[in-house]
Length: 110
Length: 245
Image 1 (cartoon, one colour):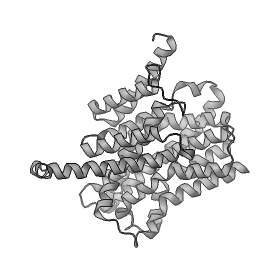
Image 2 (cartoon, rainbow over the protein chains, first blue to last red; image 1 turned 180 degrees about the horizontal axis):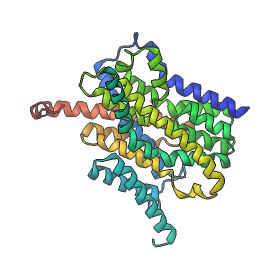
Image 3 (cartoon, rainbow over the protein chains, first blue to last red; image 1 turned 90 degrees about the vertical axis):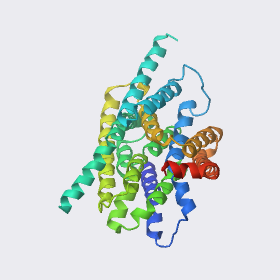
Image 4 (cartoon, each protein chain N blue to C red; image 1 turned 45 degrees about the vertical axis):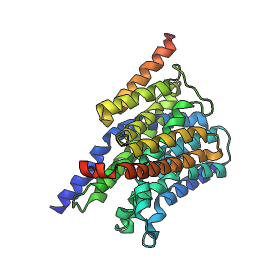
């Protein structure tokens, strides 16, 4: 029962965030400066999610070391993205490298 | 003729989302897989994928359930984590506000990070297609179907493969998000926005309820604007001459 309340609440909150500006849009006017600022939303939000996830994979402690496959994997994925300029290659290549690196770590080669 | 164009937009939207759909596959599977050990029922797990449809928030909620957090706090955390989507709607507002509610409701429901990043590119392309909303619908329909199928697969796999949680499938989301950011990193203001957001996200990571994500996003946006202003003052003539932007 509590879990159903939780799911219903999460669904309502998420939908309202994504929807609420639309019915108000007639009364909202974004200045040109604000519109341009919104152009930085994708890189800012996505990076704010990625960086802590790879630097602190356990959620609290910084792990800047070779034995952190998330950090090394993220660095290599970024390079693949910059070189290939292809989203699919980036995702599959990054994922593949991450798996290999994890395997190398588990095998104790480092 | 028009039906053709609608269908073309729909399928192009789906096709352009394909890499991100593939990136979401391991992420969806691992969500379904780990839900059991986190203490989420099958109904709650499927309910989240069907009605919430927000990958990172679903993962955070699952972690909070496992930690024994009370449900009102989980809803609060969902609000904070998904608040970034308000910025997505704001970004697309000029386009979406022209649509009738029967379009606005489903498109808002499906405005995930992935569909936003794909759709914003389509909306800002300057052509006179009347059916760009079909493109966004195609993108979200593909993401949604895939997300729910993967949740089911994960629910089944989790009961068959005990150690799937240790495979590192969660890295798929990181790889997909990096793939989405990289195309933005080609001019100085966007680089500054990403850098400032990344550094702030680490600095403010200890704020409660994932509030650091909002602070870091705003810091990134401000850094982008500031860098753009500085650049504009020093080199607006050069940029105009080169014909870019």
